[in-house]
Image 1: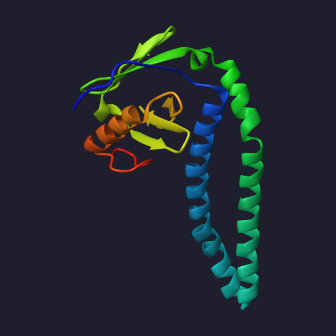
Image 2: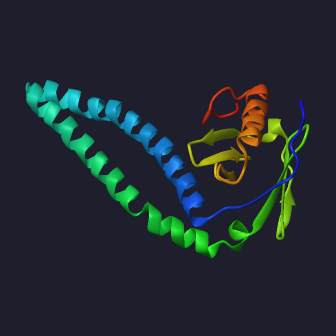
Image 3: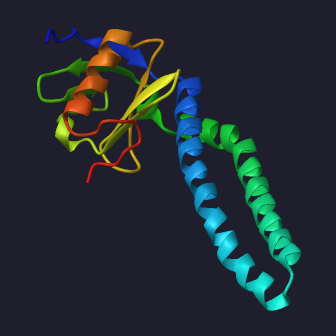
Length: 173
């Protein structure tokens, strides 16, 4: 495999928002899917005790509507929160240089350098705007696809698959 040369990029506010929107979708989709059985666990005993299936279904629908409304409000305020976090984080706004190496990646920027190996990365994810590699559950290396070539993203994706993570958002055990 031929390794690409260094790639210089800068994470913009829109890139950071795209990353956070991706994480929001992944997280809240799972939360809502887990809420459905929770609603059923509450609604079934109510329906059984009241001898009314309509009350149980009504209770489930209220719970689902409340969760949906909460998700909508959280998504509505995502951009202002992300904008504030981006502007407060100087290191996020620095120019970065990515080196894809045999055993992993190296990211250099004026404030420091990190060099995780492929097997040390916990997960990866992507959408049409960004590709992200996670060294832990709460931190990610964000690569804007407009600035990092498709070939480099393809190499990183393939290396993550070879290291034991066959699909996006799957957590390394």
